Length: 299
Image (cartoon, rainbow, N blue to C red; front, side, top):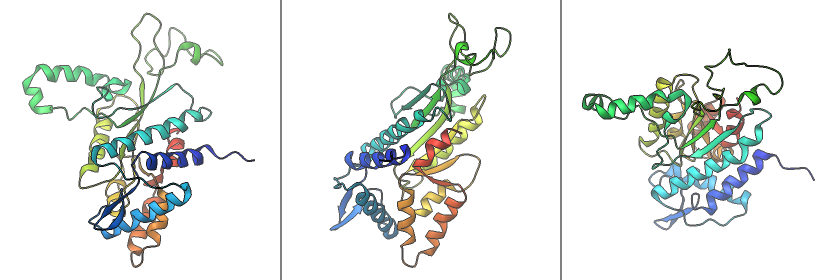
């Protein structure tokens, strides 16, 4: 029996978790079942959301549960996305070797980008701001970013770097963030490889916070820019486009149900404009499926 592909199996598991954990489900509004990722005030959003829901349920053969609400739903979505990455990306060592940290930070976690090699200097800036009311008024904490999910790479020891042949010695390459310092010296911080914003939906302007965070990561770095991506379950093409279109800040938007989204939009009567918009985002490499994310992180 042929073994199922890793990303295919992980995608199914991801969808199963979303249903089991009360993220993807039906709520009843005015006697009508509405998918939990849909906007109850928008007919198109409800139609696409229900189309996605039907297709996911048919594939998973599960019974929907009453979904969570508010922050609890968003938090569970973050956990599911983090688990999906943890279930997949570490298995791609033949494409992207390294010792990886994959972690959901959450709103109350003290870890921010200043805990990583490219942003360590922000810690000194933060201390200066705390001690100077003028700087507090001028800067606030707008330079601080606490991503929903991070992927970071631990620096490598000389033993690992020199495993196949002599690459470094005590004289050369002592400033690279990838090289761990010798025992007894202060150790280098992990290298931020990816900052992942998980937004179950994109209501109002809330999703645009992801773009602000991305610009801060780009502007404040010393070293390589991490992957900066958004993962969402939003069904409305116009809202997806509001974040996905454009270049220079977010690498790409990844959808939790892209094939199901495309099929649901394509079947809408008289809304060829929405189908064209979705296909433009996909063809323009601005919108991908969550199953594409682990391979893109290996780049």
